[in-house]
Length: 420
Image (tube, rainbow, N blue to C red; front, side, top):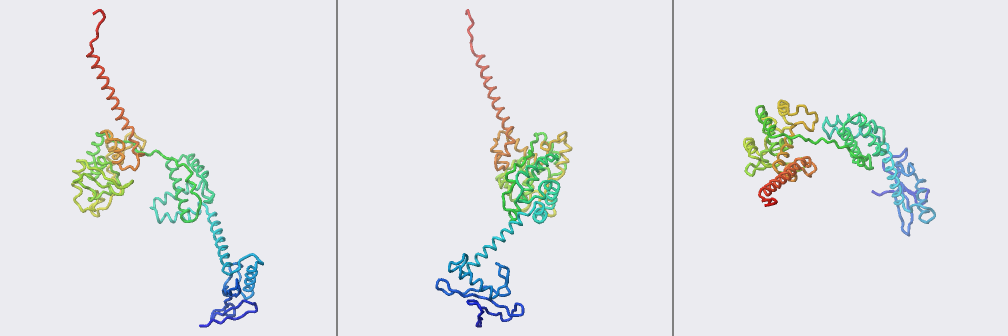
């Protein structure tokens, strides 16, 4: 189909009509300009009359096309600063629009308050990504703690100073170190989320704030007599809980590692268990004769069956230790008169007991670190005092040996008396 171009009263400006579409009462017109540049004839289209030029927000007309053509000609002759080609003019306009858009988006980001982002973006996302209890807890933390200092502040304006002030406010209200640490962790997650979603492009202010670190490390371990009494009482009430406790005492496994143990992870012939995807990565744990006898009865199922199952009907994975364990601990009065949670017996105490027994039998801290699956020796250092006791006993024994040698030597020496 041949396109028919029509002249206008402006030299170098022409148009063609759309066959059906109209702009107002007339058919829509597409305007183009023609001009010479460096001896080459150039023709470039401008746009339809129904369209708006983003530069001045006006519709295209023959008169407007003529003004653009005049500007390009003057720039081409050096009589006026600016683009000498329509393509250059469009590039400049595109760049200007992009800068305006970026400025507009930045202004929107700069205006976002912590409250607005948390309630409108972070919280809805958390509801789809996190557990219900976690979301409820974080919402309560924001409402009762974070909002005290940060709610009405723009994300871009929040500095480490504000977080230090938040720490002091919470401490003055009597919150525990752990509660303050968790509060700052939520603030950190909010800023990380804002940065990931493009609502914030600065440095996370929590990076320059020192998080208070509570000493929640468990320090209690059982004596051999306490462990024996615990196992005897558990066996009378629940074989499953007894066997899980035995496994933790003899192999140092966490409850989650015991719950995840499958039949295919147990190699009775080699005397090892494969602990898969543990807290610090997979590792091997070794089987004592007592544990081997127990596991022999429990690993008769399919390779993928859990060694300890939630119930016989669906064979699912356990999620927590039975309350039977705690009832027996109470009956044996292992926590009687002990208020410090770090010194109270819980299931994890069995893992610490395993480590303490290893050291009592002469194992060094590096060996204990590897058997427990600690990535570094930081966690293992809590048992250092037990190792020091062994060293102290060794030095004491050496001193006693020297003393015995001295006494023997003195007793066997003949002393000449004067006058003899």
